[in-house]
Length: 193
Length: 191
Image 1 (tube, rainbow over the protein chains, first blue to last red):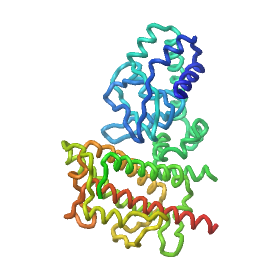
Image 2: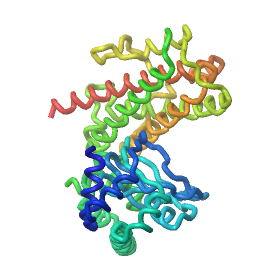
Image 3: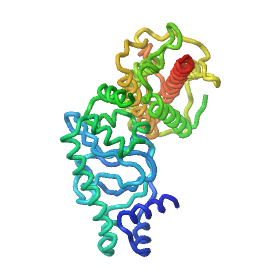
Image 4: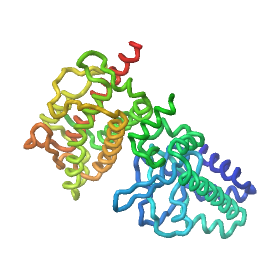
């Protein structure tokens, strides 16, 4: 059960759980897999699941009636995935989430996680810590979006996630950086030199 | 030729997966000069092969999507029979085991490579098309692939079943991706 072992390790680095709480936490997750370009959640739906990524790359993105598209975040092993705000608030999602490569996950429902959090203070604490880290990452990205040049954003992404460059189509990276494919190609060749 | 529908669609999906994997992990990483160098005078460069495939995708992907939509309400049939004509086109496209085409063909004028200014844009469109192809193949599991009909690009009054169309379309991609790989190899050894 390497998938479950990865989940246990991951949550323990966020916030160590006593053995029993860790077992209870592990029990609510079920394996799930999806092929490339599978929509996991559509805008307008409520995010039903929290995903723990064990293989593959996914993204959460905004897409509106004017065909405007913004890639908000990439996820990959080992991290959580899904439309976080819709999941936590059980409100309609404003975003889509989809796989960008064939992916495997463990996933749990809001109901099961919520019931567990009601019973276990340690688990609730661990999930709160997760949310804290996600929030912190979000603020960092806000600053990058407002201040950084495309090249700086690209370098920052490569420092965090160098493997993305040869695992997903570049159009998604270009979209994440807020530039078009042609400019991305120029950026890529300038960085190669 | 008789096929088991499930197995056929599984195989087509995994072929498309291999194609897209190669395009993502290798081709989109290559510098422009490698993609655009012709292996010999008048032979297509790798990016010209891709451009040729893209021109067919622009016709066949919307055509297949329409065929699938029109066949909504039909159900998957466990067996699929390739038509005489479908099998002929498929065999014509299918590369031999050594990777070379059985018969060299001339490309129709409207599918000849165009002047390519930015290879990254061509590769992007090609990858988007392969992603779309996989989504369509997954949609094909829910309908009868014999009853969904697609008009062929060279003669719109001739229609092939979706199953036959997918077979030759995917074989055609294999054919030119192998050609593109050969073009890249030649260029590689010369330098």
